[in-house]
Amino acid sequence: MREAPTWRIPAGVLFLVFALGLYGIAVASFVPPLIGEWNALAQTPVYVVLGVIWILPLKRFLIWMETGRWG
Image 1 (cartoon, rainbow, N blue to C red):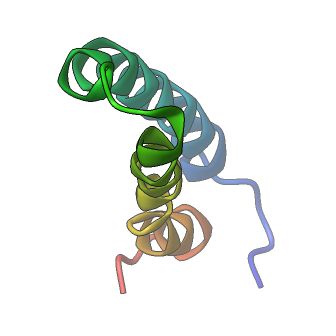
Image 2: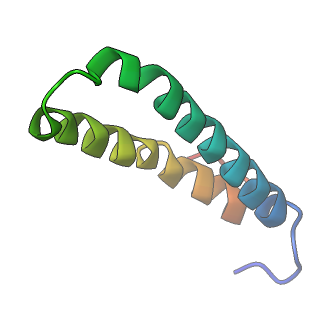
């Protein structure tokens, strides 16, 4: 358990918000021209995968925010 506040948590939260905003803008900019003509049922799995895939690197990032180590 940490006893004193650390700069990693607010910096990590700000970076996460910034990175997710960039990711959302990238998905909204680049994906619709590629799959915009598809049926809505065919588009749904693509957007579900893109909406969940950002979670994969989150575990290590949260560990870093809490402990200062990447592993």
